[in-house]
Length: 198
Image: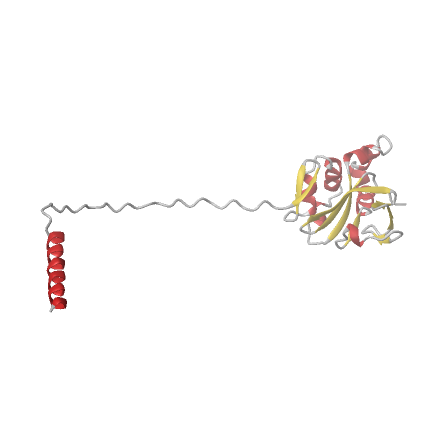
């Protein structure tokens, strides 16, 4: 009997609580929320900067060919002018691959006075072509591929001699100052002297 009495009291209390909760005498208001749309503006992705080697104040990159890279170097203006004078731009811009030992402007300045100007004359085009093609080897030859005492045949037909001492690579006595400048059609090694065929 006590159990039923307590159950009845509990049930009554629950009902009263529910009534109070449902109607507590306060006014109910509904709040309207505006739908806000956020506009996302897509920023263009910045392309990843291409890796390369700095030569003559310009970055030499693999997406450019040998001539395009050389044209960007302030240290190779004489070489680029010589390549143009010899009519070799198209050849050295071709598929290749080529390995070019590229003398700097300072290297050309070491030649006897008047040598460069003489070679750039239209009448000396054949001689200039001979000198320039003596700096070009078929295939892409990286510095690590070169061995001390190795002979490598040039496009001109004569050979170059490689010497390596304490990690420094030399070609016919000219020091490779910047090796492995990779282009789309080969590789260039910057050298500090002009190579003269016999």
